Image (cartoon, rainbow, N blue to C red; front, side, top):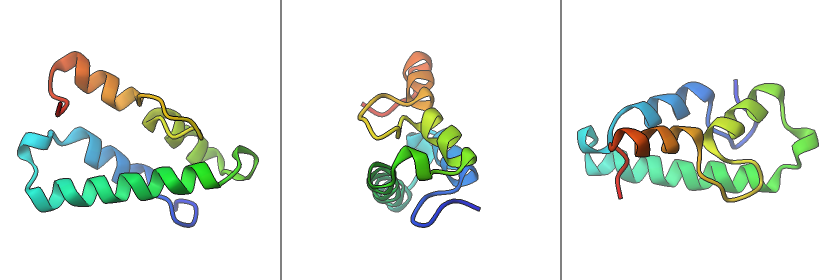
Length: 84
C-alpha cells in the first residue's frame, strides 16, 4: 500500500507504460490530476518520513521534492512515445 495521499507503485507503472496515444481524454486528464496530486504530496512529505517503497517510486517518477524528469519519461522520450 502507498503512503497517505500517494499513488501506489502499480498505479504509477500502469499510467507510465500505456502510451498517451492509447488513452482516452478522460484517462489522460485523470493521470494528469493524479500525477500533480502525487507530486504535491511528495513535496509536502519530508524525505525522512517516506516509506522505502515510496522513496523508490519517487526516484523512478522524479518526485524527490524537486522538479526533475522521471526515469519513465526519459525512457519514453528515448523511444519517441512521450507526449510533447
